[in-house]
Every structure is written in C-alpha cells, then in structure tokens.
Image (tube, rainbow over the protein chains, first blue to last red):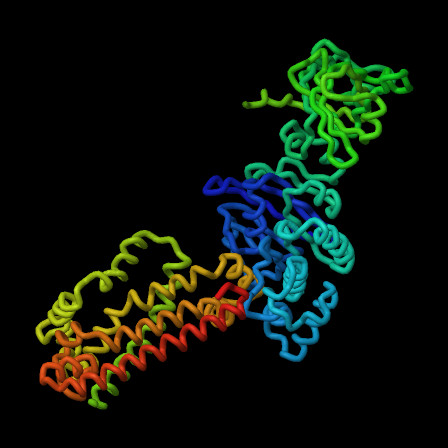
Length: 371
Length: 225
C-alpha cells in the first residue's frame, strides 16, 4: 500500500466513523462544518490523539492499530503538522523553529537544511526573526517549513489559511499549489472552506459528526453529492423532493416536482415511483429574458416571483419563489447588468430554466428539514 | 548587625528555592496539563498554608516532626539527630510552607503554554524531556521566576513557623527576622533598624530584578510586558 490509509471508529467522547486514503503526491481535503471531527482525525494521524478503534497506516508502516495493540508515539511518526494557530515556538527564531524539528542531524547540516527550507517557502532573509516579528502569512510559511523539516512521510494541514487576511490567503494558495509539486507524500488538508478544497485538493472527503459521507474529486462531490446530507454540507441550497416518473428517449430521467415535470440527468437505475431528492447547483439556473423569449427556455421552465435580491459587487444574488411549490425558494445569481436589463427587482414576475444536465437525483430523499 | 542570622536566613531561603523548584515544575505541569480525580482537593491542599496561621501550621509540624512521631524517629535513626530545632527541620518546614508560593505561579506559567505548542513539540519529534527543556521551561520561565522570587522573599521574612519549629538557636535556627524581634525585645532599636533596612534592601533588589527580567522575557515572546 502506497500512501496513507485511515480507518477510525469510536463512540465517545467524539464520535468517529471515518475511513479514507490518500495516495503519495495527492492532496486530500477533509471538509466539514466545525465540530465534525476533522481536527480529531488529523490528531489521530499525528498520534497526539488515540482513538478507540481503527488503523492508521503509511506506506508499509502501521502507526496505529487497536487490534494489533500498536500506537506509535507522535515523536516516532514521521509526520509534518501545520497547526491552525501555527503553534510556532515563540522564543525561537524562524531558523530555530525549523531546526528544532530536525532531530539528531549535526548542527551545521541542520542550519544548511533549515535555510534551504526557509528559502523554499520564500522566507530568505528572515531567518533571525522571531514569530512575533513576522506577519501572519510569514508565520504560516515558517510552520510549513518546520513541518517539512522532519522529512515527513505525511503532511497534515489543519485549517492553515484561516488566520490570515484574504489577500495573503490568495498568495498562500498559490504557494501551496506550487509547493505540492515538490512534495512526494500524501497531503491531508483540513478545511471548512469548500472553495479552498476545490482549488487545492485532488480529492475531498465530506465529514459530518466524525463520519466520512462521501469521498471523490471535488467537482464530483460538489455537483453530484451522494446524498441530500452531503448536498447540504457542500452548500447546494437548491434541494427539493420529487418522484421519478420515467425515462425518456433522449436519455433523461423525468421526475415530478409539485405538479411540474422536470427533466434531469439520466439515472436509469431509478424505478418509476421512487421518491428522490434533487439538487441543482446555482450555476445551472438560467434567468429567462423578460423582453423576448430565447433559446433553451423550453428546458424545465419554472415561473415564479423574485423574492429577494441581494447585490454584492457586480453580482445580483436572487431567490425565486416557484409558482408550483411556494414552500422553498430557488437560489441563483446573475451579473448585475443582466438583472438591470431585465428589470429584475423584488416582487416582479420572472421565470428561470433549470438545465437538465445539472439536475442531480439522490436517494433516499432527505428527511424533512427541521426548523 | 547579626551577620550570622542574615547568612542563615539567606541559606534557608536558598535551600528552600533549590528544593522547591523541581517540585514546582513537576506539580505545576501536572496541575496545568492533566485532569484527574481529586485535582480540586489537591489544589486546595497546596493552597492550605496560605490561609493557615503560621503558628498553627508550626504547631502541627512540631507535632509531626517531634521525637515521638514516626517522621521524627525516622530522621533520628537516619541522621543521628532530631529534626526539630535544627536547620534541616527549618528547611523541610519552609519547603512545605512555601508550596503555594512556588506551585501556583509555576502552574500558571505552564498553563500559559498553548496545547498546540506542546503538540507541535511532539510532532517535531521532541520527547518529553527535550520538550520540557527546549520548549516548556523557556516559555514557563516568567512563572517559574515568580515562583522562585516569591519563595525566596517569603522565606526571608517568615517568623511564626521558624519560632515554633526552630526556637532561636544562634547559627542554627536564629534567622534575621527572629534576630530583629530579639533586638527589639532588648531595646536595641539601632541594630533592629539596620537589620530591617538590610532585609528591605534585599527584598527591593530581588523584586526589581524580577520585573526587569520578566519584561525582557515578555518583549522576547512578543507579549505585552
């Protein structure tokens, strides 16, 4: 087995039922709301937390296995960890922080290697600074260099971008994306930010209450969630219930939604009469032109009333209350000039098309939303 | 000026600090990092000398260390002399009595180290001893220094326990605080005045050095002084 494989289980105090793997050279994002057990899983890999059951294996080594009675101490696991708070040693310089993780190497060699690592994270010239004399972004880079100093077999990043401002974050994203090409190890990135996962990860695993609900490529998980629960966690707000009617010749599955027929991406495995949840990402909701009809409007037209219009920058975020199902609004957004040209405002009649290719069907249907 | 008494007091304070520092590091870390049954009771016991009148505390120690007690008999058998009314007895009493002054600040010092930083030390491959030496002690240093200064200054001034447990044997148990009382009793206000002034100067000096050192450490760690 090449790479990292993790399988954890426990009932209390923090419930865990997580299982995933991360190949060498791959970036896996663990995504979930706060309290979903992401950090506990990371700490279980690092060895600073000991779960009740499961295994943690890296390449051919077993770091944790309750069945075999193995729990390797964090000191003996070749793991690089970047903490959310960075957890730098405040009384040491940047260089000292990095050198501290180098174990028994001769001092001269430590110094040379630490300088090289700091150069790799673009911190040359700041070796003698203490953490308090560095900016947030620079501290994060020191933390990354220190994590790499041990020549780790796994790199763990715990929300590494949450403590810096947006501009710095964008720069750090690029640096990490560049850096990962130089790293030949599994990288596990914990984040609650979906965009971050989509941007940086090859695969993502969605976590909730310590359970891995779905793992896959980020585009796949965010557009084709395995369940309504995942759909909600990946921020798909347009989530509705329906019943399968049948399949048509153009390889579409037809469902009925509150008295309206909707064409969806084909799911030939679903039998007529099956209750389903369906989701449509914001990007597959198209606003009809109000002055004249245009192409594509025959595709799942949904008339309704614009309920809210929120303008952020050059984008209008809209909700439409469908005439056939006034219970839940449809969320979508259009460029501000499109909204203006079409005379969109709160309370006006409008219609949208739901593109069939973007309509994703899920079983079993989501339980009725609480609250 | 009773130089013998002053030297005795300084020796007593020095020994107390030296013996109490490892205890404070051990107990401070334990109380700061671990949750265990009876932690509240332990913390209360550590604080007890703070609220107990010194004469009461001295009385119990006198009973506990006396020639008829198991501790007293053990000491007699092991070292060939009794524990009460000796310098060693004073040191032992002083170590016990100063526990709150040493353990409390040490505990606060270790509590100030974020959990993440200790985990980071483990993830950097530092074992418990290396982590203590390279990370925890430097970071808990302000607390440990406060512990040492408080213990030192408090031992210099201790009166009730010393009198109860040590009597006032010159060169053995007569500390400078007792010497001052002695001189006042003898209407020798001049000597009492000089000794008081010396004691005050020493206390002022230690406190000043402490503040200076901790503000330096604060700047180094980037904390507000």
